Length: 80
View 1: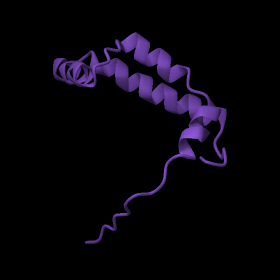
View 2: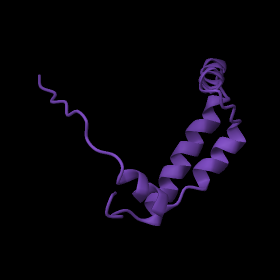
View 3: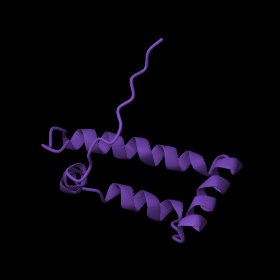
């Protein structure tokens, strides 16, 4: 991701997946309560429509900028 090795289609697919997940939150009362509880704790109230708009406005350049500021902290090895 740091090198931009992903397409606009990848971005759109990811956005669609995230938006779909957000839309299902309102379908279940427990999920909706958890969402708004998290919003209250963070001190920022973002309704679903605004959240979806923010997701849809993300650009490839922004993704690359974030990727360049992330580094691996911990690696887990799973074995039987």
